[in-house]
Picture 1: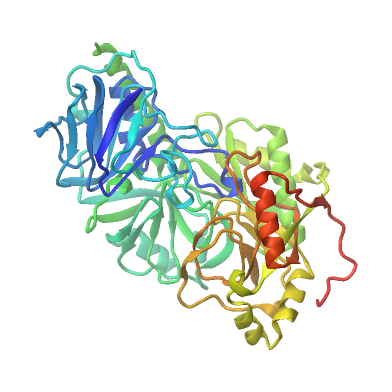
Picture 2: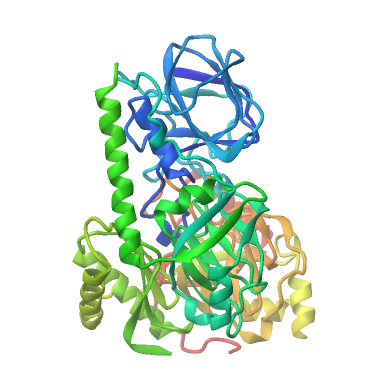
Length: 317
Length: 251
């Protein structure tokens, strides 16, 4: 079913789902939505399964024509979304009609917005996922960001969707200063005590070199014991890589599967949406937690998703 | 070196590193591969994906279904038994490669840097079998080991914006093949018409960790012929059981 026509594509708008798993051993990055929370909630709002494909919209959003009556939801960064020039209410299922124009304006807060549409975006399944990996031209819509003139199709949907706005407690507020909880390792022993102290006590600033692969930070250099090179190994999501210049990079969805730089720590899964939405000039600090604490937080995060699901189910039409 | 017992290191709240040593070494790499096969065969509860590398494995897990403690215990047991793991006989893939000219723009530079002629560089490069230590960097990209140190050449100071798919290059004491068009700083000495990665193939990568690669010098017209055959689906890939060459020429 044709659902949306692209009038203007925006800066970088790609089809993403929850990621491509099982192929990292062949060098295929996981990809998927960078902000897993906003992505999941967008899907739930329109009655989709939590892993259905959405549009991930970066900073300067697209202009889209609606080709059939449907329901959409926009979550994540506030990039001034509108329907026919009136503000589109975010974190809410919005009914749109054939011919309506959904557009994005000035980026207000955050970096990445998610537009879910009832039925999910229907592009071919490539190695178990619909996510786009632009670098290798894999997945999504012909392996590339959307372009003017593209039509996006959706699967069938008769699921109910939420009426009214999602309760406030489920809507994250963008903060210019964030603390990212990290688990030290795997190569924290490759840093001096002073280096670890610098990492855990300094403020770092988000630079312009931030994309789907990683977020480069600026601040006090972290001191290595004897160089930044390791024999290449795997890279988990949220890995904080510290190359020879001592400046940390938090690795995200499009990260390479393996790498040869020391990784001082890994950001906890629940704090990854904060990295996903961190804007140029935002500040972050790192604080150490135990793996068991991270698991506790992850379990609370999943309870929250279950609560949201329940709330939507009981307030749907 | 190879550790006596594996080191387990955290990779965040959903992944665990299993380090078997800290070097680039064929025996250590074989152990990694054995361990990978053992983990896959054991179907450990909660393990969702394993990424083997030179001397370690990254084991992704689902924290609702297992704990790092249980995983460490199970993986420790597996590592002690990994030696019993049946090991498939390695295969070798012939990679037809057109050296020099438009396909290998840096062959002359590598020759000059090594104090050799272009032909000697080709002879040294194609005269050895290369172990595929792992795949990574780009989908289907093989990390190859075994290049003659005599043709080691530093990377370009400024990487090229576009390197064609199939390019064979040298970076320091490593050699590799670009599976897709991409930017890169490797010194290009040749190009293969083979396609190293296709999402519809099972597995999607042509070359597999633990197998070997042998470069076979071809002419430009053979390059064109093989390209046509590949397009028509009539090319027969030369892949056979690996036996160690008696003399790695020019070692």
